[in-house]
Length: 204
Image (tube, rainbow, N blue to C red; front, side, top):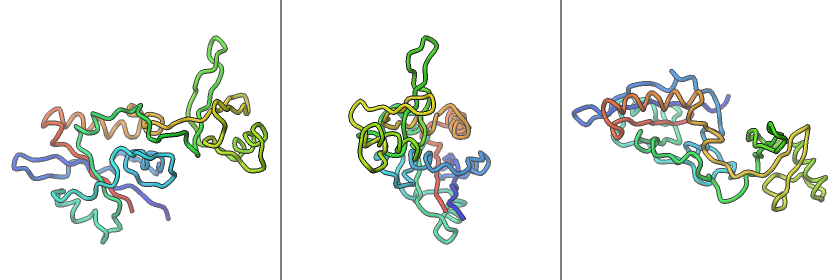
Protein backbone atom coordinates (compact mmCIF):
# COMPACT_ATOMS: atom_id res chain seq x y z
CA UNK A 1 0.00 0.00 0.00
CA UNK A 2 1.15 3.54 -0.73
CA UNK A 3 0.21 7.02 0.33
CA UNK A 4 -2.55 8.90 -1.48
CA UNK A 5 -3.51 12.55 -1.54
CA UNK A 6 -6.99 13.61 -0.47
CA UNK A 7 -8.65 16.96 -0.19
CA UNK A 8 -11.22 19.43 -1.41
CA UNK A 9 -11.72 22.87 -2.84
CA UNK A 10 -13.83 24.85 -0.40
CA UNK A 11 -15.80 28.06 -0.84
CA UNK A 12 -16.84 30.53 1.85
CA UNK A 13 -20.58 31.15 1.90
CA UNK A 14 -22.27 34.46 2.59
CA UNK A 15 -22.66 33.53 6.25
CA UNK A 16 -18.88 33.05 6.58
CA UNK A 17 -18.95 29.27 6.81
CA UNK A 18 -16.75 27.17 4.54
CA UNK A 19 -18.44 24.59 2.34
CA UNK A 20 -17.01 21.73 0.30
CA UNK A 21 -17.33 22.50 -3.40
CA UNK A 22 -15.19 19.91 -5.27
CA UNK A 23 -13.29 16.83 -4.14
CA UNK A 24 -9.73 16.34 -5.40
CA UNK A 25 -10.63 12.81 -6.48
CA UNK A 26 -12.45 14.43 -9.41
CA UNK A 27 -9.11 15.59 -10.81
CA UNK A 28 -7.38 12.18 -10.81
CA UNK A 29 -4.13 13.59 -9.46
CA UNK A 30 -2.48 10.22 -8.97
CA UNK A 31 0.64 9.73 -6.88
CA UNK A 32 3.30 12.34 -7.56
CA UNK A 33 5.56 12.74 -4.56
CA UNK A 34 7.63 15.44 -6.23
CA UNK A 35 4.51 17.58 -6.69
CA UNK A 36 3.39 16.83 -3.15
CA UNK A 37 6.73 17.86 -1.68
CA UNK A 38 6.93 21.00 -3.79
CA UNK A 39 3.40 22.18 -3.04
CA UNK A 40 2.71 20.86 0.45
CA UNK A 41 5.99 19.76 2.02
CA UNK A 42 4.99 16.11 2.07
CA UNK A 43 8.37 14.41 1.60
CA UNK A 44 11.90 14.55 2.91
CA UNK A 45 14.29 14.59 -0.03
CA UNK A 46 16.07 17.78 1.16
CA UNK A 47 15.98 18.98 -2.46
CA UNK A 48 13.03 21.22 -1.55
CA UNK A 49 13.75 23.45 1.42
CA UNK A 50 10.89 25.89 0.86
CA UNK A 51 7.64 24.12 -0.07
CA UNK A 52 4.89 26.48 -1.15
CA UNK A 53 2.24 25.59 1.45
CA UNK A 54 3.98 23.52 4.08
CA UNK A 55 2.34 21.92 7.13
CA UNK A 56 -0.27 24.54 7.90
CA UNK A 57 -2.55 22.04 9.53
CA UNK A 58 -6.28 21.51 9.17
CA UNK A 59 -8.10 24.86 9.16
CA UNK A 60 -10.14 25.23 12.35
CA UNK A 61 -13.06 26.53 10.30
CA UNK A 62 -12.92 23.75 7.70
CA UNK A 63 -16.14 22.59 6.09
CA UNK A 64 -18.18 19.93 7.85
CA UNK A 65 -17.21 17.22 5.36
CA UNK A 66 -13.49 17.91 5.83
CA UNK A 67 -13.75 17.87 9.62
CA UNK A 68 -15.65 14.59 9.49
CA UNK A 69 -13.40 12.76 7.02
CA UNK A 70 -9.99 14.43 6.88
CA UNK A 71 -8.95 13.37 10.35
CA UNK A 72 -6.64 10.78 11.86
CA UNK A 73 -9.67 8.57 12.45
CA UNK A 74 -9.88 8.28 8.66
CA UNK A 75 -6.12 8.00 8.12
CA UNK A 76 -5.74 11.70 7.36
CA UNK A 77 -2.46 13.40 8.27
CA UNK A 78 -0.10 16.17 7.13
CA UNK A 79 -2.92 18.64 6.51
CA UNK A 80 -2.33 21.98 4.84
CA UNK A 81 -4.27 24.59 2.91
CA UNK A 82 -4.05 27.63 0.64
CA UNK A 83 -6.49 30.22 -0.65
CA UNK A 84 -6.71 31.05 -4.33
CA UNK A 85 -5.20 34.46 -3.52
CA UNK A 86 -2.09 32.65 -2.27
CA UNK A 87 -1.95 30.26 -5.22
CA UNK A 88 -2.38 33.11 -7.68
CA UNK A 89 0.58 34.91 -6.08
CA UNK A 90 3.04 32.00 -6.46
CA UNK A 91 6.34 32.81 -8.13
CA UNK A 92 6.68 29.54 -10.03
CA UNK A 93 10.29 30.32 -10.95
CA UNK A 94 11.58 31.08 -7.45
CA UNK A 95 14.22 28.63 -6.16
CA UNK A 96 12.93 26.03 -3.73
CA UNK A 97 16.36 25.50 -2.16
CA UNK A 98 19.66 27.28 -1.65
CA UNK A 99 21.70 24.88 -3.76
CA UNK A 100 21.56 22.24 -6.48
CA UNK A 101 19.30 19.23 -6.05
CA UNK A 102 20.72 15.87 -5.08
CA UNK A 103 18.13 13.74 -6.83
CA UNK A 104 17.46 15.84 -9.96
CA UNK A 105 19.47 17.12 -12.89
CA UNK A 106 18.85 19.41 -15.86
CA UNK A 107 19.10 17.63 -19.20
CA UNK A 108 20.44 19.74 -22.07
CA UNK A 109 20.26 18.85 -25.75
CA UNK A 110 21.44 20.60 -28.94
CA UNK A 111 19.01 23.25 -30.16
CA UNK A 112 18.16 24.20 -33.78
CA UNK A 113 21.47 26.02 -34.23
CA UNK A 114 23.54 23.45 -32.35
CA UNK A 115 23.82 25.27 -29.04
CA UNK A 116 22.82 23.40 -25.90
CA UNK A 117 19.31 24.16 -24.69
CA UNK A 118 17.80 22.93 -21.45
CA UNK A 119 15.37 20.24 -22.54
CA UNK A 120 13.87 19.16 -19.22
CA UNK A 121 14.60 18.34 -15.60
CA UNK A 122 14.80 14.64 -14.75
CA UNK A 123 15.52 12.38 -11.77
CA UNK A 124 19.22 11.67 -11.39
CA UNK A 125 19.83 8.00 -12.18
CA UNK A 126 22.48 5.62 -10.91
CA UNK A 127 23.99 5.61 -14.42
CA UNK A 128 24.33 9.40 -14.25
CA UNK A 129 25.95 9.26 -10.81
CA UNK A 130 28.32 6.55 -12.05
CA UNK A 131 29.27 8.59 -15.12
CA UNK A 132 29.90 11.61 -12.87
CA UNK A 133 32.28 9.61 -10.67
CA UNK A 134 34.22 8.56 -13.78
CA UNK A 135 34.56 12.19 -14.89
CA UNK A 136 35.18 13.91 -11.57
CA UNK A 137 37.03 11.12 -9.78
CA UNK A 138 36.37 9.15 -6.66
CA UNK A 139 35.05 5.72 -5.88
CA UNK A 140 31.56 6.75 -4.84
CA UNK A 141 28.54 7.55 -6.97
CA UNK A 142 28.29 11.33 -7.29
CA UNK A 143 24.92 13.06 -7.10
CA UNK A 144 24.55 16.32 -9.08
CA UNK A 145 24.78 18.36 -5.88
CA UNK A 146 28.28 16.88 -5.37
CA UNK A 147 29.65 17.84 -8.78
CA UNK A 148 32.25 20.61 -8.90
CA UNK A 149 31.13 24.14 -9.87
CA UNK A 150 30.40 24.25 -13.57
CA UNK A 151 30.51 20.47 -13.81
CA UNK A 152 28.51 18.69 -16.49
CA UNK A 153 28.18 15.08 -17.56
CA UNK A 154 27.56 13.89 -21.13
CA UNK A 155 25.47 10.72 -21.24
CA UNK A 156 23.43 9.03 -23.98
CA UNK A 157 23.46 11.98 -26.34
CA UNK A 158 22.58 14.62 -23.74
CA UNK A 159 24.48 16.80 -21.29
CA UNK A 160 23.44 16.88 -17.65
CA UNK A 161 24.04 19.78 -15.29
CA UNK A 162 23.12 20.43 -11.65
CA UNK A 163 19.89 22.35 -11.14
CA UNK A 164 18.22 24.35 -8.40
CA UNK A 165 14.60 23.26 -8.47
CA UNK A 166 11.65 25.59 -8.95
CA UNK A 167 7.95 24.89 -8.66
CA UNK A 168 7.53 25.29 -12.42
CA UNK A 169 9.93 22.39 -13.00
CA UNK A 170 8.05 19.99 -10.76
CA UNK A 171 4.44 21.19 -11.01
CA UNK A 172 4.02 23.23 -14.21
CA UNK A 173 0.99 25.42 -13.48
CA UNK A 174 -0.38 25.12 -17.01
CA UNK A 175 -0.08 21.34 -17.31
CA UNK A 176 -2.41 18.56 -16.15
CA UNK A 177 -3.36 17.43 -13.65
CA UNK A 178 -2.81 20.41 -11.35
CA UNK A 179 -3.74 22.96 -14.01
CA UNK A 180 -7.29 21.67 -13.72
CA UNK A 181 -7.29 22.32 -9.98
CA UNK A 182 -6.00 25.86 -10.46
CA UNK A 183 -8.50 26.57 -13.22
CA UNK A 184 -11.40 25.45 -11.04
CA UNK A 185 -10.22 27.66 -8.18
CA UNK A 186 -9.68 30.57 -10.57
CA UNK A 187 -13.21 30.32 -11.95
CA UNK A 188 -14.76 30.12 -8.50
CA UNK A 189 -12.69 33.08 -7.32
CA UNK A 190 -13.88 35.16 -10.27
CA UNK A 191 -17.41 34.85 -8.86
CA UNK A 192 -16.89 35.06 -5.09
CA UNK A 193 -13.40 36.47 -4.49
CA UNK A 194 -9.90 35.03 -4.21
CA UNK A 195 -9.96 34.89 -0.39
CA UNK A 196 -13.19 32.89 -0.45
CA UNK A 197 -11.80 29.90 -2.35
CA UNK A 198 -9.51 27.50 -0.53
CA UNK A 199 -7.68 24.25 -1.21
CA UNK A 200 -7.42 21.84 1.74
CA UNK A 201 -5.32 18.68 1.40
CA UNK A 202 -4.11 15.79 3.49
CA UNK A 203 -2.47 12.43 2.98
CA UNK A 204 -3.16 8.90 4.05
